[in-house]
Image 1 (tube, rainbow, N blue to C red):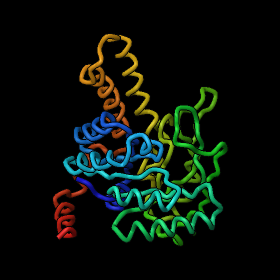
Image 2: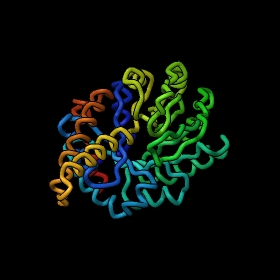
Image 3: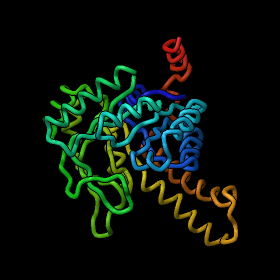
Image 4: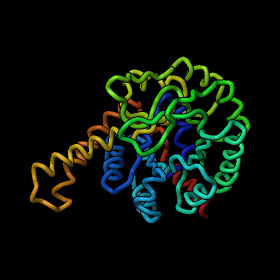
Length: 301
């Protein structure tokens, strides 16, 4: 069932669990996510980064939408890290049910202005908007970008930002980075900062850079308003490391149905553990899919 982000995260926020938001750039990863979500009875968010969209093209979104419509659990299609209104409009035309406008690299007032424009455009067609305040770091193994130095989200600024923009969810910078951390660097999520933001902001919060962080920190973040956790590198590492192993073991095989199943299994194993960690396993029943389907049909009629 395809729904928007506001519908999905309102339930997660209320019940203090997080929904994983997983980056896809091919149909194998998409299958792994949806199959695992159905097996775990977990909601899931399928997100596509602009770099990934350049690889797969706009037509891929139609494939994702079809898969989401047929899924037996709630699914959101989310645009990841877009920094232009033109990009937002492109996503809306392609049928995304959630968009992210990323003005985190801009001065505070300019970030607000950009986010306000995105909210105006997206809300007009019933699509949710994620914004970002503060900057996420960038480590090895990620093409998603990020800052050389993390600019932490200030709680009072977060309150003002949400009130002035009307965004539906807010990605906060509390110490995470995209990609994998070097061996000498131990990640540490600033839960005290997160708690202060949570007390001032009344919308679901988003944790970017969900890979390669201590499980305890991830689990505790859901106590303080984090209802969406982005995951890309961990999943892709599981998939492609197993694919490399399979290619070495079967150097003379070239058929996808021979080479991909073990990689798919490795990704699904990782995804299942993450859904358990985020607390989303078994939560699809909270969404009353039948009622949501009736609501969607009423809108179409």
